[in-house]
Length: 91
Length: 91
DNA sequence: ACGGGGACCGGTATTACTATCGGTGTCATG
DNA sequence: CATGACACCGATAGTAATACCGGTCCCCGT
Image 1: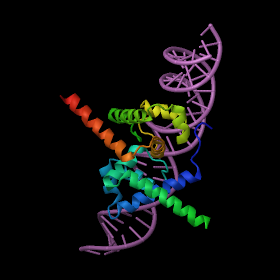
Image 2: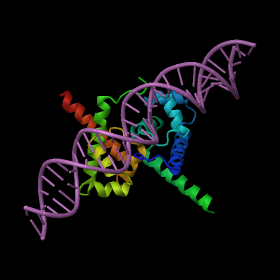
Image 3: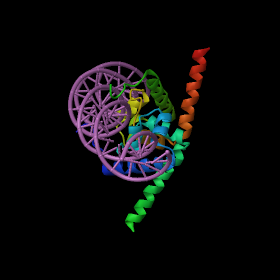
Image 4: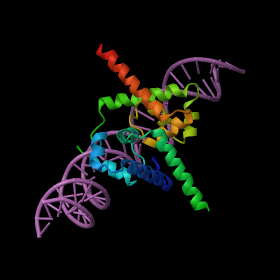
């Protein structure tokens, strides 16, 4: 196998990313945000739903920019969620 | 065409990203950094050389993390380079 | 009841990313 | 001169991302 399939934890990481973006989108529609980010609404929807676990770098950058998100903050939030899940499961 | 090929400007953007990462790598070897980032050395080399213009989000995140780079700063630098190139070419 | 906006899904098509392999070149050091 | 570290490249193979299509569902306003 040349390119290894994505692992389960990578899928979960993608889901956390998607949830964070969806939360930040708040009231706006997918079509609205996707159009501003110059990507397809389908792609944004799939990212938010975790069906694209490892989107392209500049795709995430464009969406975060439209939503006014700091990438560093976004990642810090993901790590925090990760730790919280670990703690919950480990208890 | 269902998935549009990458444009020239997207390639150039990838090259700027690669140059920034290579500069930040400074003295360390590709193998060293790639191993720490849990990616293939070939992949890191291709990213730095701009032969992978739109790498996966978490791939860039992992490399930036190993190099101690802030993603926000990294992107700000890319935008600045972009503006500088525009100004140079436009003169 | 009808229509529209918003979200979701599966299928399909095309391109891109990622990893491995074998080979080349350079440079420093023994 | 040999050896090793470092970087680069092309080819190959396999998986993933992206976009477009048609269809479905729910909810709200008229």
